[in-house]
Length: 247
Ligand SMILES: Nc1ncnc2c1ncn2[C@@H]1O[C@H](COP(=O)(O)OP(=O)(O)OP(=O)(O)O)[C@@H](O)[C@H]1O
Image (cartoon, rainbow, N blue to C red; front, side, top):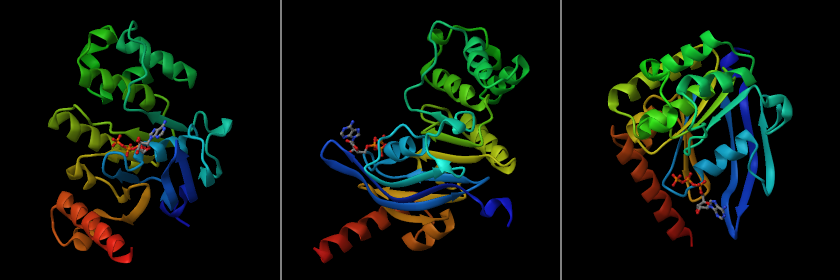
């Protein structure tokens, strides 16, 4: 069996109740190793909740989430899984370099590896700058560098390109592709449908349910248009109409 066929994440019959709402409803899928999986869906569809379940910080109501053949959140996965949230969790009083070195040290990484991660997110010239004095987009990239430095086998990124300019966004997607080619598994959520074309597989969520698991090309065919944004919209509209008809 080739490495691409080995699943890194297996989610079975996952239900998550938050407050009184079933925010994930019978979600079932697996994610292959060494691939980029895009998590797409309207605001509030459950993307962040699903990522939280995969990294093991979300209380699940029923079902199972296996990561690298272990239950999500197992202590053995601490060095294997990297998670970058939408709200960057870095030390504002420390410099860029000190932040990344600190996170790197927790995973046994050295100074050179920290510099490499900083360069990868385009912050090489700002390495000595206090994090609090960065722009919003630069600030969120520090968080990404902190995740990259640990070289996790599974990298879960919640909207990592928000607030970035097109040049940097393109560079980051190239970086993600290189990581995947090296065997890292990436799960990346996005609102930007154009970014979906960089993913190997897409998980489309709507209102807590998995609408489809397909490739960008399959989405174009299913949605009957080359435009991924429109294709997704068509699928959502068909789903709404289908459910109305069934009701
Ligand atoms: N702590 C909470 N208690 C109750 N409901 C919650 C809680 N956190 C999130 N929700 C609800 O769960 C649903 C899914 O939220 P989630 O953050 O996973 O969506 P999302 O797809 O990531 O949205 P966005 O794209 O806007 O970030 C939403 O309806 C949200 O209002």
